Every structure is written in C-alpha cells, then in structure tokens.
Amino acid sequence: MVALSLSACGERETDAGEDPASTPSESTSESASADPSQQFPDFKACMVSDSGGFDDKSFNQTSRQGLRDAVEAYGMQEADIESNDPSEFNDNINELVSQGCNSITTVGFLLGDSTLAAAKKNKDVDFSIVDFAYTDDKGDNTAPANVKGLTFNTAEPSFLAGYTAAASSESGVVGTFGGLNIPTVTIFMTGFVQGVERYNEDTGSDVQVIGWDPESAEGSFTNDFEDKNLGQSTATEMINQGADVIFPVAGPAGLGGLQAAQDNDVKAIWVDTDGCVSAEEYCDVLLTSVMKGMDVAVQDAVLASAEDEFSNEVYVGTLENEGVKLAPFSDDVDEELQATIEDLKQQIIDGEITVG
Image (cartoon, rainbow, N blue to C red; front, side, top):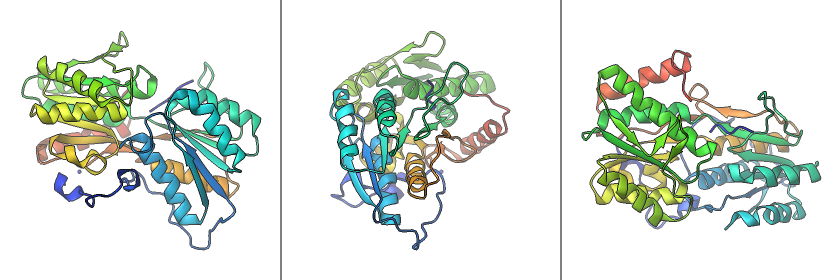
C-alpha cells in the first residue's frame, strides 16, 4: 500500500460568522465546468470523514467541499457522516450503504481497510478514498473495480515550502511535526526537509530542521489529529529550541502550532488548504500553505460515478497537473524568493529535481 500524499492575507477573508465547514476552499486544479443539462436527481453522493471531523480546516473540510460542489452542480442527493473515532469507520460506511448511496467517498489513510472491506461486499457502490491507494509490492494497482484512490504528491510543494522556510528563517532553525507517523503525513515532512537541504546547497547556508529525519523515519508527532493543545505544546518546544518557522502536518492539532507561532511572533506554513482562507485568524503568521486539490478530485470522482464512467485508476495530484501547489505568498516573501521558488517548481515538473 502506498499513499502519496501567490497576494496578501487580507484579501482572503471570509464573512464574519460564516460556518468554517461550509467555507469554499480554493481549488488547486481546474474541474470540468458544470453542464446544466447534466442533472442526476436520483444519484446519491455520500462521504465519511476521518476522526478530525468536517470542520478541521484541513483535509476533511476540503474533501467535503468537493462533495458539496458535485451535489450543487449536478442536482444530486447528499449524505455524510462525521467520524469521532476510528472505531466508528466500519459502522459509518455501512450506514451510508444502507441509505442507498451510489457513491461513497472516505477521507483519509486510516479508512483504507474499512473502505476496502465495504467495497468488496457492495460491488454496486462506487468508493473513492482520499489519501490512499491499494497496491502490491511492485506498485501495481490492486483495488477492486469499484474503488478509486485519490492521492497527492505533496512532497513536491512541501519541497518548495521547505526552501521558503529556510530562506525566511533568521535563526537558522525551522521545525516540523506531524499528527501520526504515517505516509500521508511524513510525505509532507520529507519534502520539507529536502527543500531546506536544497536551500543550504544553493546558498552555502546551514539551516537546521528539527522534528523529522527522513533517513531514520523518526521525528516529532502528537499521535493525535484533534488536540490543539498538543500541537501548541509541540510547536512551543520547537520554538524554544530556536525554530522561527513551524510546519505542522497534524490537522486540527496542527492549529495549535499556528497558535504557538502567533504567540511567539514566528512564522508558519499550513497544509492541505490555504490557511488564510480556512484558518484566517492565523493568516498574519503564514508564509504560504501547501495545498491539495482534494475538492476537485472528489468532485470529479463523484461525477464519473454518476456518468457510469467510474474507474479504479489511481489519481495522483502533482505540481504538473495542479493537483497540489503552494497558496499565495505573504508579503514577507520577497519577489526574488518567489521567482526562485517558481524556477524550482518548473525544475520539479521537468524532472530535473527529484522529490520524495
């Protein structure tokens, strides 16, 4: 099994009092324009969240936005269930099957086993899973015909984020931490470290990364995606060690990292969504965000199911297809650095730089 996972902040504000779970995210790629003649009133599109919940200002929220976009654009029925604990995954999926869902999207690496089990029992339902793909030891797709993996090579934009962090650091120390030591988390962290290493190589600097060592696969983890206090204490410890840019990869727990950055007047980089939209209260400390086009991928998979064109071919979001990218930079990132990042991005797309 494998999982792969520029304007000022003030221009990204949402209306006061708006439900963050319903705030549209900024898509990271172009989906097909909705055709008013394509309406599927008898089609039911459904979703099960990971334990972070749909208002996590991260991957659950963005994935549900894709479901809602499909429902609104194509006149579908909708149902979703929020998971509070991994022990609920099986029951939540089965509940949606019993409700007559035609398409069920599950959100997150941790739902891999539950999704596969349900798909094998319900071959008339199309399942999509965010941040997961089913493969054998050779990397060949082993998913049943009714299961599609939606994956994202977030190492690529995280490399650019690491370079940005290193170039922006005044202390010469930057930090990253994750929610769990799983591939969809550590892919961000590895790309980040590699970006810092490239900055050091290009400039002769010696910026240090604390929180993750790709070679030993050991680092700092909250072992929790929900507890903001854990994220805050983890980030605060890194700041006390000299880190002046924090890169949390921990869902809602990662918001604690942004709080620590704000409290200690250091910078941060968010993940999954544009943090200046989903977590605008922390926009003042964000240099940028590593974005995943989960909303677009989910919408496209749901539409393919409704049109009877669903396949189990794995989707991989990359910089090249704009399935992943960086959010707009803050004013703290000067034009020269932005130009360098753009050049590095093209080198990754062209295969001149290997990331991950």
